[in-house]
Amino acid sequence: MVTGFFTRKRKGTSMELERSETFVGSDYTTAKNVAEHLEKKYPGWLWAVNTMDGVVTVKSMLLSGNWGFVLHEDKIDNDYRAVTLAGGEILERYKQHRGKFNTDRYAELNMDSKGQLDGDRS
Image (cartoon, rainbow, N blue to C red; front, top):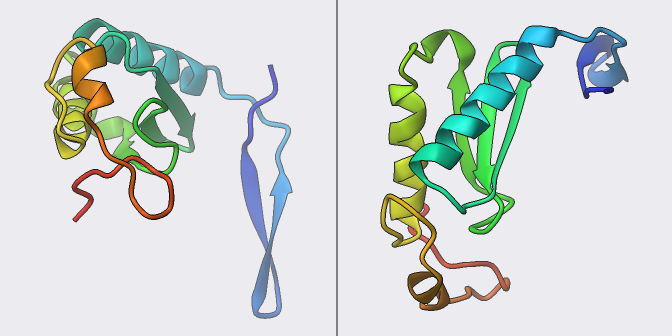
């Protein structure tokens, strides 16, 4: 499995990103554990989790591919409380209940002028 790890190389005032061939197994394990925990707490929401350089990013692909949350890996405790709270917060911002995916409630969501689900992103 190839992952998207990048390093920065400065050239003058611009930055260039270059792919690193380093694979960190703990990043894969963290992403897997966070995704499994979210699926257990909030099943059916199609959680997408990525970890890189100690940063965990999470999105629900059913809500929006543009909005999610970011946590530092070292801030995630053994019982994943921070992950649970952040996942629930994302659901609430889209006027969904914390818990299992509900088709009827999801169908009530409106689209904004850009064709994306309208949530409280303030």
